[in-house]
Amino acid sequence: MTNSLLKHSHPFPRPDQVVLITGAGKGSGRSLAEAFAERGAIVAANDISPVNVEEVVDQIVAKGGRAKAYIDDIAKKVAAQNIINQVEDDFGRIDILINHAAAEPHIPLLDMDEWDWHRVLDVNLTGAFLMIQSVGRVMREKGQGVIITIVPEAGLELRNDGGAYASSMAGLRALSDAAGRELNQFGIRVWAVENHGPEKVVEAVLSLVEREER
Image (cartoon, rainbow, N blue to C red; front, side):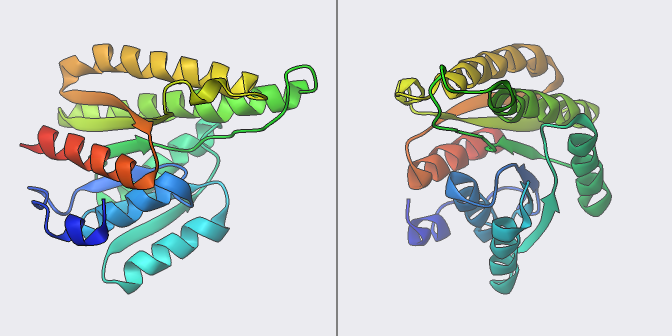
């Protein structure tokens, strides 16, 4: 989806909605941050490193959008909760959560040490769990919300040297399904979106959000 097409799409019914995106410093996370900001949303951009995500935020603000960077490690419970508390303090709510942060080491299982294994699962699976749980509690109080988790295109997580990544992504899909079943009763919609590249991810995510907003 091109920027010109985004500009001519139907705007969100609530253009000031707050969107929290993890791993927003690069890849599809960056594209999503830019796309939401362009359409009037307030972007809370998270990443573990300030280098890329602060550049994204600066570019959004320079174009007249609203965004703020939140630098912290979502794989840690206290850090994840701190991000959410800060976003609530800054903007009063969280309408949409997009789980994009991921670690993807290319290390064969026979060569991988325990630290690498745990780090992949901590970021990819535990981080998503912590964000879904904490943001889900915030959304439950409001009686509505959208949670979207970005997962790899079907089959791509099974490529060589990806045993830890593949395991985490299989768990992430299952986690998203379980969260969808559990949180639906609170007015929270949970979706997993396959990553077919930044443009297609943006198109798919925006379509989901607009459908839920109608």
